[in-house]
Length: 434
Ligand code: HSE
Image (cartoon, rainbow, N blue to C red; front, side, top):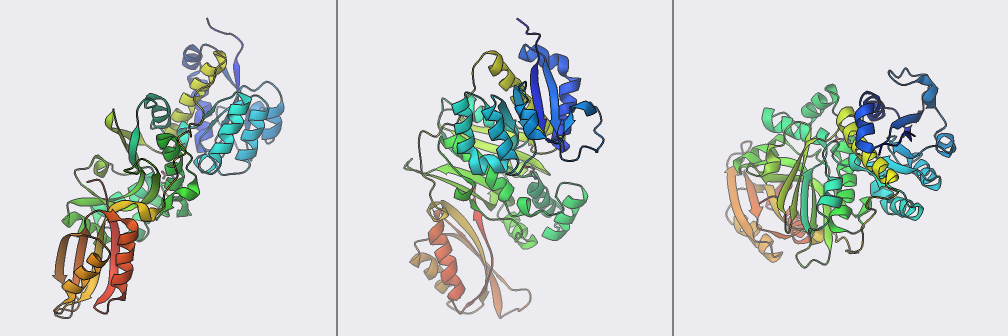
């Protein structure tokens, strides 16, 4: 039966995502009412700059006092699209204290304080939904939390940052260098004026922490995620990747250890074979590849950012939370019962592609090979070519290893750097997805 009293929504933040949420709530009001079973009403919009013209939003709804909006007593659901830690954290806490369920798009906050926020929601008997925090429009959080709740996820590997995927895709397809590709991403509005959060992997690491917690039913915080950015990836790396039938992506990789007793979470650039489904993810798209015991391999693909795509995920959560309210129920809360610890990067087992500048004289190859052997790292392939700048004097040596613990691989590189015959380590990159 349709309820006539509307469910009231407070929108906290009205930027690129918030304004799209408000627009869709208005234009799709009838459909949302039918799907929820009650009208849903935008009851207040908290902003920082009230004088800004906001098309389609009744100016009477605008306030600069988000806390007062949450405390006024009639709000059922708060949508937090402010981002960052504060004031978002304080406002979400206030919402829970006042019986208000929360839909948030805030990856940084969830990655840092997800456990405390879940506990507060749980204690208050309320919902905390955050599909939009990871990979924009792509349904991922809910499928992992709910659809795969009966399965066992062993591995998640994804491209969860659109800006860096755009840059790497440009470098790959046009031969552009990092700076040139970044400039294009900035000109097209993909990269922020300060691109640090994207290119240094912080954004992807926050999303990795959230996904790892959900995938393995354990707590993974941002600090637990190993992170390397992609600013050092060069045209030479792409040329080398091409020779191996690979491309380069910034990947978030979450794995359950072989013995099942721990998990790892990491973000770094890696070579992947062109045959891997993630290799064909172009431009600013996101995609996440999930390997589950019973389901097998699943691929989630779509736009990972932008106002409308992110608003789509927010509104999906809003409908779910409103339905729960009407049913006087709550959706799934945090599931961290496995309490699996997060192992350090050194324990990750992976492959390396190492490019060395070496002296071109007898015994160099043997010396390099011995260094790998001394660290227990087995070599898969070696490719040597004369150095174009110093014919007869130097050479480039590209070594691709078999799988070995990351600690052994980085120990090998450290030892290689100390060899007199190794003039420099031009690049080191992990090889994944085989
Ligand atoms: N800056 C992010 C990206 C979108 O480029 O994917 C928001 O997480």
